[in-house]
Amino acid sequence: MLPPDGWARHESVKKGVWDKYFPKPVLITVDQFMEKDKAGKSRWYPLVTGSYIQGLVASGRDEQRVYVPDDILFQNHSGSLFRIICLIP
Image (cartoon, rainbow, N blue to C red; front, side, top):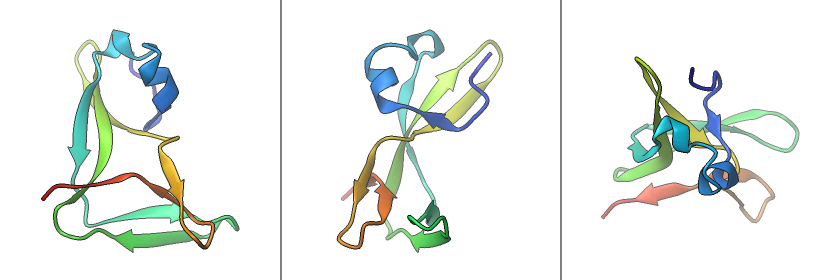
């Protein structure tokens, strides 16, 4: 059975904890994404064309799910945390 949430800790993927799910990297195509700021307020951020969120596809018995690493974040100058966004030229 695959993990029930949508997050995968990057360190656990690197250590092989996810190997039993045969993880494969995937680029997630979205128009925008939501992050919560330090105060817990949800904010939506648009992505420019050609940008993707890095994720992984995990496989179970009869299913596949997409997970987003929850600890691949960077902090901008205002202190907000954001997902790593991949720009494909």
